[in-house]
Image 1 (cartoon, rainbow, N blue to C red):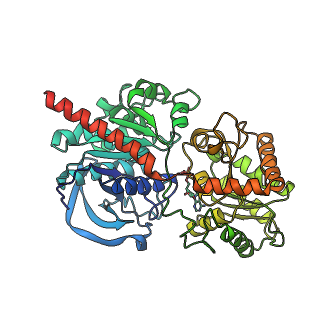
Image 2: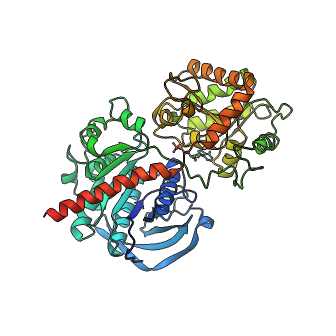
Length: 508
Ligand code: ADP
């Protein structure tokens, strides 16, 4: 369990609620694995702490074993035992915390959306720090993510640094400011934080409901480094419209707040080695791409007589953020323009799931439209590989990964200019951007008209300029969306923060 570092790199520990591919709900899971692998390749020691959910994909964990230790952590005035497991995911060492608490926090068959999520994750945040403390770890950086592990920041400075777990700087990344995990202030005491100390306007008190605490605000206040997942989103959340009540807090901590564009895991998303797709391919030989298009059309019983009929893909959680009304409109617009449409998505919102089930039923045996309302990683690879265009009409988008994955598989993005989409998709007609970066089609007004018009442009380009389209695909496939440069930015932030702390310590 203990490890003494003799390496020159940093010791970085991520505490998170998701990790791809074993426990993934959305982009957060991809980031934990992709960023950790890139940091490990740069010579740092990276470890990850996750909850031991019952619904983890256990077959993807190597050498999983229970450790011969029990970690007792505080909650609701008592100590609870936690069994600790360790395993390897994609070459990364991962600790799993299994609480022996009567509420069976992680035995729910699901990751999020439980009535007691605040308890589940504040318990986990505390137990994770307890594990690091009792294992005698001396990390340089503890990196927590989203509201679920935001508790780590105040817990660290309020309780654990004083106990002696004091080697680390805390980095907090908010992957989506829509989710802040606020709760009645009284709930905070369960994990050992002092409600009176914390429910203050300069600490964890929610900016709009003063009897509630806001874990994301707490992490912004208490962390040494605060990041979000793209430069444009970092600007957007500092405005009243985008900040969801936290814009003033973010502005007052602007010195430690920065937006870093996520990368994608280029091993997991590689059309030339991908085992899930029907035919592998690369930018210099696109024959495999045509085979995938054919394969998915047959697999989904779509018409496959016309190989040049464009196929539009969409892979997403169906939540309001993603512009569901525009996604629905894109289906009909695609038909109008003579294309085919494949949607892979599922919704945690009942009425949205029902609405799309109705649309799916309506197009049940249609030759040009198929809706698959589920989560299916293998199928997602095939859709990226098979589609000619990929639609992302988000109302807001902190970073977005699907546009980058689509490009890597030669599917040209049609995206709304917001957040991370604005930092990664550049319109073919945008003269303000150097030619070599123009890689897709963008639109601004979140309206059916705006979307209809950009789709019309994309279809026209596709049908009237096949050579130009092929060059566009090849360009998109060779753009670098790997984690390398983003991981370097995190590395620099970590290093600067560690040096600053050491310099300050040397002065005293
Ligand atoms: P978010 O984190 O908001 O869901 P991102 O674009 O950052 O959006 O990340 C989405 C990730 O989840 C991508 O890897 C995408 O391929 C995957 N994904 C989304 N919906 C599905 C689905 N229904 N089946 C398989 N993968 C999905």
